[in-house]
Length: 77
Image (cartoon, rainbow, N blue to C red; front, side):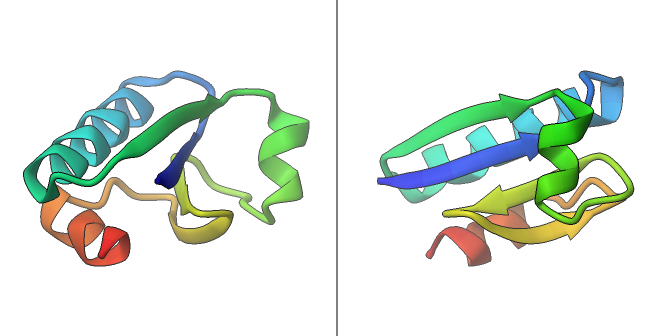
C-alpha cells in the first residue's frame, strides 16, 4: 500500500493536489492511504518550505507546485 501525504494548509492548490493524487492512484489501481498534513510544524519536518507538497512513502516528491496526475503516477509505480 502506498502512503500519499499532501503537505499544505488546505488551500485550493492543496485540494487540487489531493484530487490529482487520488486520480493517479485510482488510474493505476494501487492501494493507497491519503493523508493531509496541515500543521505547519509537521510540514516543516519534511523540509518543505513552500506548499503544497506531496510525499510518497515518506519521500517528498514535489513542493511549491501542483503536479498533474501523470507525474504522480510515475512516483506511485
